[in-house]
Amino acid sequence: QLVESGGGLVHTGESLRLSCTTSGRTFSSHAMAWFRQAQDQDREFVSGINWSGEFTYHADSVKGRFAIFRDNAKNTVWLQMNSLKPGETAVYFCAARVELQGSRPILRVEDYDSWGQGTQVTGSS
Image (tube, rainbow, N blue to C red; front, side, top):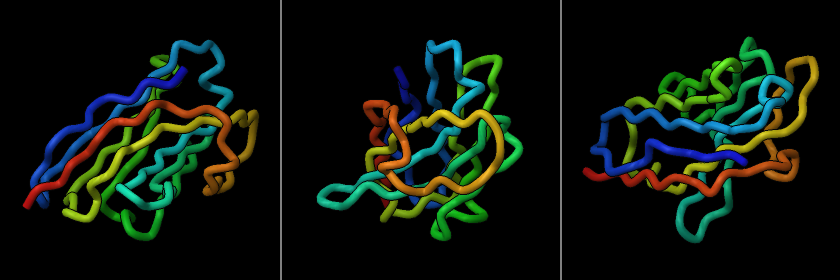
């Protein structure tokens, strides 16, 4: 079970950090990612990180502004969002899939088999 937290109201240009935790004992064997879904829009990939945390990748729209990192000892992955834009209002979801080795971008919704309930991020100008 994945549980997101940290969402809220944020003004344009401000920062926000989202967290995703799990009580599972195999967190370190999973690639993790953040997706977001705006109202009436498809869910889209934001940022991903491989099982060890050594490989990260981002959607072009957030490169240079967002960072993803994890602590396997704490079963937690974070999404640091900087310089937020009004159009980034969405529900942000944490996702996981088994990954025992390697590092490659995993970008599609259908490639992940575990999802959290999401946390709302609302941008305000």
